[in-house]
Length: 289
Image 1 (tube, rainbow, N blue to C red):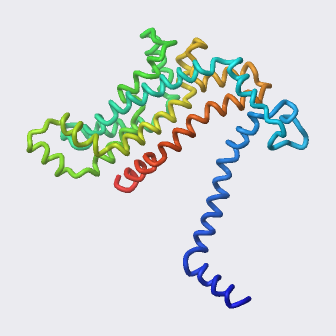
Image 2 (cartoon, rainbow, N blue to C red):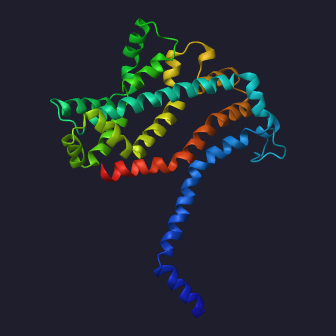
Image 3 (cartoon, helix red, strand yellow):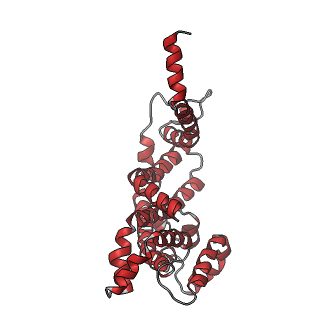
C-alpha cells in the first residue's frame, strides 16, 4: 500500500468519515424497504396486461401505458371522491385545531379542580381501540338519524373526540412555555382567552402545524369511518371508493394501481411540503416534553 493511500485511509477513519459512510449506506439500504413498494406501485400503474403477467417479470415496460390513469376516470368518479375526501379531511383538521389546543391549554396553564383527573381520562382514551367504541357510537348516530351523512365523520373533531393523542402533544408543548410569561400577562390584566389567542397560539405554530398534517394524513387514508357511516356511492371517500373498485374490478390490477397512485400522490406531496414543520414539531415535543 502506498504512503498516499495509507494517509487517505487514516484521514478516512480519524475524521469520522468512515462512520458517516457506513451510516449512509445503512440508511440508504433501509430506505429502499420503504421506497420499493411505492416504485412498484408507480411502475405497475403504467403496465399493460401483457407486461403485467409476463414471465420473467418486467420491471419497467417498454411501452408505458399512461392511458391506465385516464381509464380510472371512466370506471369511478375519482374527482368527486377526491373532493369528498378533501372536504371531510379539511373540516376534521379545522375541528381538531379549534378544540384540541383549547383542551390542552385548560390542562396545562389554567388551575382548576379536577384538572389532572380530566387529563388522565383524556389520556385514557388512547388505550381504547376504535373498535371498542365503534358499535355504541354507531348506535348513537343511528338514533340521531345521521347515518349516511358526513356529520359522524366531522362533528367529533370539533368536540375533540378521539383527539387524545393530539391533546397530549399540544399540552406537552404548552408545558414547556415559561409560566412566568403567563403570570405576567395575567398581572397585566389579560384574560385567559386573550392569553391563549395572543401568546400561546403564536408561539405554538410548529406543533399546531404538526398536528394538522398528522391529522390530515390520518383522515385522508381513513377507511373504517367512511365504511361505517357512508351508504351512497356518490358520498364515498377515496379509500372507500378504491375498496369498491377493487371489489368490482379485481382483475384490472394496472388500473387499480393507477387509482392507488393517484390516491397516494397527494399524501406524498403534502409530506414533502410540510416535512420541515412536521419534524420541527415532533422535535419540540420530543425534546422538551
